[in-house]
Length: 69
View 1 (cartoon, rainbow, N blue to C red):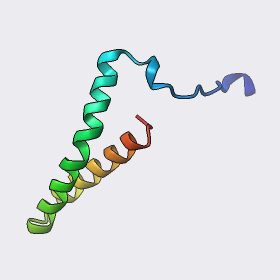
View 2 (cartoon, rainbow, N blue to C red):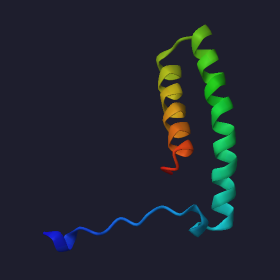
View 3 (cartoon, one colour):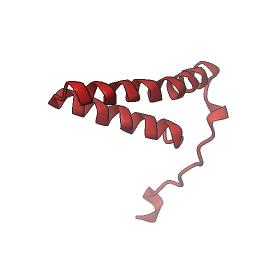
View 4 (cartoon, rainbow, N blue to C red):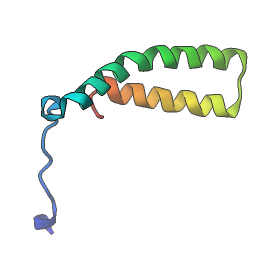
């Protein structure tokens, strides 16, 4: 079964196409303000959809800042 396991390559963002690097750069800088706005909105109008949306924004921003995606 060891022949089925592939060796995981290390992540190098410079191997991405230039347009995708720009998208990641702008997404990284825009996701935090959107997340903060959603958290403030959640304080005033708490609904189930807002809680789920905030969780998704938090997950995406964490993944961008830790270079997982």
